Amino acid sequence: MTEQQLSAQSPLAGNKSEDSGIAEMEELPVPHNIKISNITCDSFKILWEMDSKSKDRITHYFIDLNKKENKNSNKFKHKDVPTKLVAKAVPLPMTVRGHWFLSPRTEYTVAVQTASKQVDGDYVVSEWSEIIEFCTADYSKVHLAQLLEKAEVIAGRMLKFTVFYRNQHKEYFDYIREQHGNAMQPSVKDNSGSHGSPISGKLEGIFFSCSTEFNTGKPPQDSPYGRYRFEIAAEKLFNPNTNLYFGDFYCMYTAYHYVILVIAPVGSPGDEFCKQRLPQLNSKDNKFLTCTEEDGMLVYHHAQDVILEVIYTDPVDLSLGTVAEITGHQLMSLSTANAKKDPSCKTCNISVGR
Image (tube, rainbow, N blue to C red; front, side):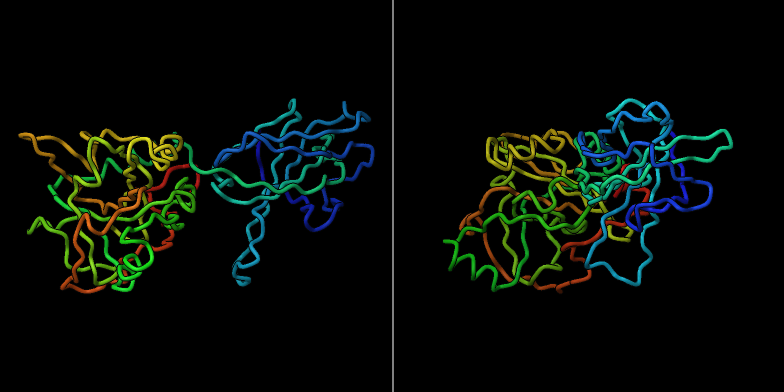
């Protein structure tokens, strides 16, 4: 399929094409009953019905594809340039693919014209079809595997650690004790990270960190999330009865990068969710987070050169660890809450959108 930018008027602006070089011809059939199927993060199939009259004169299809306008978008920003695709009249359904205009998890509108190319290079066209809306899909396991490979390149050497930890405000832990019987509950992950991540807004879990300071081997005393820290022995969350998954790789216009990993108890709802959507890692041998056995003891290592965000998918009782106030500062600038990924970073982006 050949794609090029056209000057044809969008169906959003009217139903007639009045620009120079494109003539109107009523007898060309107008597409109707449009169906969108086989939607991925960067492609879809499109099918429509047409009256049989003058059908044999059709040489091309014009497809008008636009991001759906966001009512909350900044009205002072430039709007996306409408994308017109010129496609030879191939048998339907037709596959529309191209990472240069399709982004994952994004709402689009689409409309279609039939066209007949003339000897002078101009087109006669039908009226525009009705406008159909659809939403592209999340990254598939194939796309996440590409992100995984990129993350492995910069993960760096492995450092030993012994505890997972979670920082929050004192009020959070008081609430857990009073309202949830001492058990931290999984919550839906926010929209930070890659726009096409299948875990954003869907996976339920509890965020933990495991990074250590190079000189002490212990968790840092600073945190962006609160001055109170829950620490729990690594073996209580990550052991042979859990599975490990790769969730995302991103940065926030900074030199350092984040890797999201998911730990799920075997057979749990979180495990089933991840098994269908995320690449599974070998817990004993991967570039980010390992659990191995030495002299009958479980030993843990984390990657030094990326910041790991670990999601545990089951409730965690505070009695399994300790809560104490940290002595460092609360560095809000390091928070990743709903942080948007840098779409221009060559280190952590793949070619199917952001």
